[in-house]
Image (tube, rainbow, N blue to C red; front, side, top):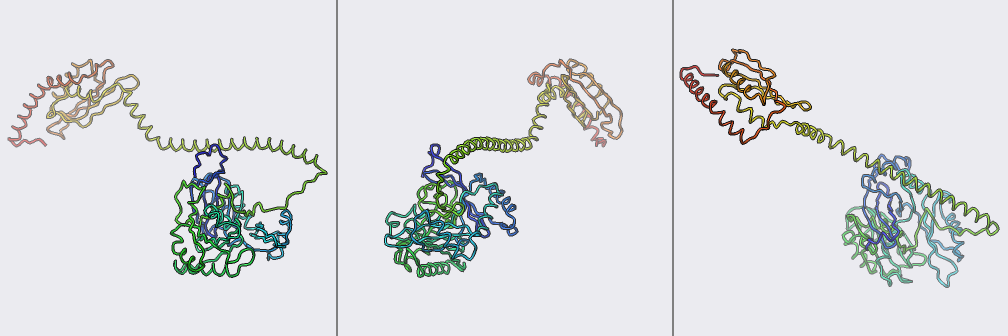
Length: 537
């Protein structure tokens, strides 16, 4: 199915949820009249300490955090009750018009239920009537009002809007009807539907595009072979006690809703034992469905959720909705027509005004949330990049200084004493403040005071480049071979010419010749002293 024409279709973002005893299954999808696009499937394990019935606010807050962690943003919820929390009964009622059925079914349900009607939420399916029958078959499904209120409280606390609450066997029938051929769903033909939700097996019968029977059982989980035998036995027991519009002989097809891997061993057993035509239906591969997420390994457990979304696109099966059950039609009060029209007009105006205000407030709230998100992202970016900015500031401060220190060292090298006449403890290059030139500070030891004097003379000859800020030297007998310490600070002149490495290199060679001669002479003196036993340390 292609949803690329979604811009021309009305698209709804729906979140399908099924609340199991200790876990929640969910599908995040987009629904259009042409089909469903599934964006993600997930399973949330409910923490042991979390009780949905006693603390729905805490449960809703936990659910909200889990959905946010999985990137789910839609807020419209299509919920599905598992078969085990519902009571499903087939009853016969007098053949009355459809508009009288809701009250009659409610009366029948009160007679057969162990709970008062005000503690129940019920809906029903009016089954197909036969021409010669004097009564009607109805399938009644009910859940406790407490279960529906807990579901509404938890979803509301999570910031979600519950739009429907169905039943898993009815939703699973939507999947089958999109796969079954026309002859398999023809009038008179019945189909067996089996789905698996962990240890729970749901068994239903489909006829005339309606669920006419539903049952569930639990398997012990003692191995695949034992579980499959338990399923076969449960199906056989269900078919033996059938009453109503379907008999076991009417079943011509069996539909195992799930992946091939889940029902690979069960399918041939069911075919050989019950002799229907067995089909395995992958709920994530039916017509009208597009997958934009990874398919879960246990596809059968998600069959009802897939069906609940498909039912919001183009429903094929008669639905069950405990949130909006079938009701008798409201009879118009013709004597108060004018009052109704006036109220309707006033309500329409109020709805338009209120809707406009609500829409505007909603848009502003979305903008606020968007700005909050963008602000948080910018704060994270600033925090992440602050060390880089500090480093960039240091680089900018360095590049702002006009002194090219590497070139300056080449120029300074031509003035320094030879390596055997002096060694240096520290060479510090300081940036100049504002437009001032930088400073150079040298500390170390001379072999002779004359070395420092010669260095000073060479600096003075280059007064267009350097100016003495300080020059101290003193005798220190702790280093007998270099007994003169010095601390010299030079200031680069404002108008010092730029160092040209080519000419500077040549000048270095030219100026270095006396130094080299001196170095050679000093080396001879050092060698003579070493031979005399006077070795420098």
